[in-house]
Image (spheres, helix red, strand yellow):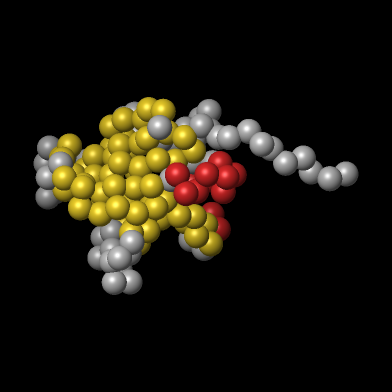
Length: 135
């Protein structure tokens, strides 16, 4: 029996991550983080199937001081924990163009939750999900 292809589009959400409290940022920072678009399932997890269907719409903006400093795409790459890694891939950044989400596949993107991103320098930074709304 042939597997049916779903023509249903997964719901795209705009997710805002703001830097969480840390040794360097005792209060955290609402002006540093990421705004990105991803297809979420009902539990708030990123949908691989939804991403495959709508990957060109899954963009990211990294901001510092409240200003966008990089633009790119949400990518799903083989390897890493669980067999795959979600990453932010930036255009025109001389080969240093990727920041990996730490276990993004298993985290629920709901307001108040915490996630981590490994930046281009290899540092793991923690962010709070500050907003999730329809894209």
